[in-house]
Amino acid sequence: QVLLVESGGGLVLAGGSLRLSCAASGRTSSTYAMGWFRQSPGREREFLTAIGRSGGRTYYADSVKGRFTISRDNAKNTVYLQMNSLKPEDTAVYYCAATNRVDWNSAPSLHTAFNYWGQGTQVTVSS
Image (cartoon, rainbow, N blue to C red; front, side, top):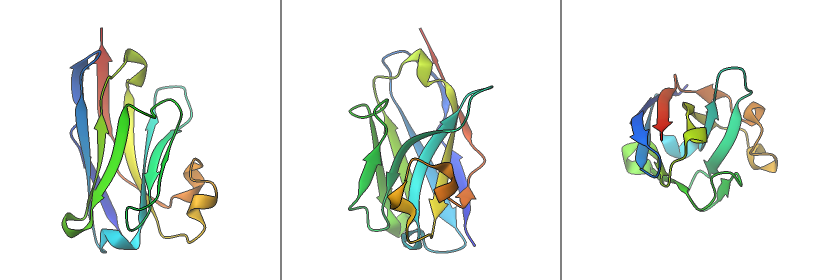
């Protein structure tokens, strides 16, 4: 029903910034709440942030609150993750996700709340 493609990952020095994009196709992005997760080798997928269908509700993990900002542009069918003050421990593959489940925000940090996933984009932060 929806295809998600992340872009914008790369190599950045500690303290730097990156903006990730996730383009949605197949259905209008306004149909879905969106989220960002990350995963490092040997670790479980970690919730970062999520945003409601209209953009009025946002959720952030404590680890990124104040540094990362999620936003969406439904006219462009795109969700963004602005990442500032990056740290080496932010190094991971970053995934965008979408859900059309009406109760998704009862537990937005759970990856099982999301039923569509992008392919991921690598972010590497060096010091």
